[in-house]
Length: 415
Image (cartoon, rainbow, N blue to C red; front, side, top):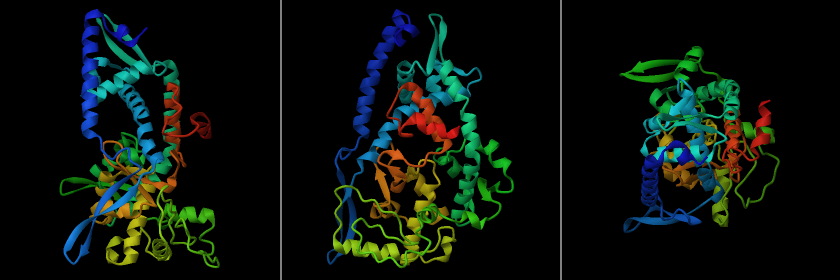
């Protein structure tokens, strides 16, 4: 039975259809207002400033797009709605939600996306009620059987989350972060919604929450030097690059910017970018330049020093590496400016190192990707919670989930 006929009698149905037409008009206008005119171009122009004898003038540089990473943002939209609905339904006492209460949970605009998902994916969402009974939505039996597996995925994630949260605090200058900033990136870190009750108090030897000037801060209780190894260094160890530090290898000027050695970053320039010899020579010097560990206190270094500037790149690299999908919005990154002593012109720093980071303007806010973490549009390292989400979203029959390529076989790693 069609969703609209199932939910409403004839008179409310006409009202519903009018509302849906209004929704289409509203969403189209909203999309037009929020869209970027450069969104579909293969590159965009970024204004920087350079000094001339006549003063400071704007200079435009080309920023090349990576369409595979732009695609990630598009592919996550519908799975995100499905997972949001799942969380809302499971948070209710009776494991169901009345349709009339949906707007209170998600807001006016998102309500329409949720209703469309409920109608489109009957294998996940079961609708009951109608006539005089309030319309309710719950998970289907099949969806419920998959949903219970989230507990196992969360259990597997807990040691990973504890480790990454400790490393995040170790990155900061005072080994503490306001709780409101942890809240800001809790989804990116993979933390459960109730982490303040279920996770933090469970590990008093690692974490404590203290108030400073009326604001709650998460404090690191003890420092563990063995955690002060970056994801970049771990990758180099796996690849054998740290064994001889890159010595003994005579390498000509690399055309792709990649060099062996303990201080090199993995570079992946976008298609269409053609660096000249001068650029590559400068990049080679930068790749071979030593720099302090991101886990050393940033206050010890002069921020104007080239080694300290390269360290900032390493800090940003490590920050993104601590997220489960190796990405976060530029707004979220800049929120840690004081804790990590990030540069004031953070976006320009990210743009300058576009072989390491990628900024997409897809979505409500610009998002920063760690490029080496992706193979095309697919995240290379998939944590248990992402594999669970992929399995749940697969119930919809979607084959273009942004969580993983080959949803079904990837989840087998959990068993």
